[in-house]
Each structure stands twice: as structure tokens, then as C-alpha cells.
Length: 157
Image (cartoon, rainbow, N blue to C red):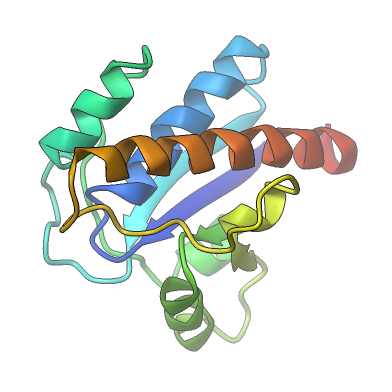
């Protein structure tokens, strides 16, 4: 089983969206039993809370349910439990590199590195922007999800 953890700052917008979108793509390709998916935040401000309603609505408009996700903070054990820890932006990546445990085995990198057709490196935080920001986040996450699935198929399955 390949294990993937998506990480943003609060785990209420970008990383739960990535969890749900990636899970949706895995199911569509019959891979849900071969890859485990979770999400977390670098900060625990929203621990136990569902995703931002705007994220839930934008995902639902694309036929993806993320309402089941509950926010949690990254744990030290995540660095040994997961194969991939994928940060939504450089700040999150730096936080993950700083928090990594000495015996951690997870590959820590930017999620958008798997979206080869995009010029962007960071998934922008839509929290303080307008509604269109949530759709843009979904577009980026959809592109990176396809690339990540191709990567996992080539290296693990």
C-alpha cells in the first residue's frame, strides 16, 4: 500500500481538497485499495473541523465529496507512516522539512511537481480570496493528481 499525505497550513482548504480529488481519481482508475490518502495541516488551529464550506461547494460542483475530511495537525509519525508528504506551497514544504524526524522515510516535496504541464509551483491559498480561487485550486490539484497517479503506477504498482 502506497501512502500519501497532502499538507497545507490549516487543513481546511487546499489539502482536504487534494485528499478528496486524489481519492476520486484513484477510485475512477480502480486504485483505491492500493493507495491510502490523508491530509493534515502544519498548524492545528482547525483540528477536528470539516473543510471550508467554499472548498466543499467547489469540489461538490465537480462531483467530488470532501465533506468527510476532518482537519488535523501533522504528527511526527507521519514522516515514517507515509511514503509521500506533499506540500501545497513552499512555506508548507519548508515547515515539513524543518519538522521531519531523523528516521523519517517519507519523500517530502511540492505537490505541483507532479503537474508537468503547469508553470506554477505552489497551490495558492484561496482562504482570503474570492470564489474563483477555489476553482483555480481545484484545477491545479486535478492536474497534479493525474501526474501523481502516473508516478505511483510507474514506481510502485
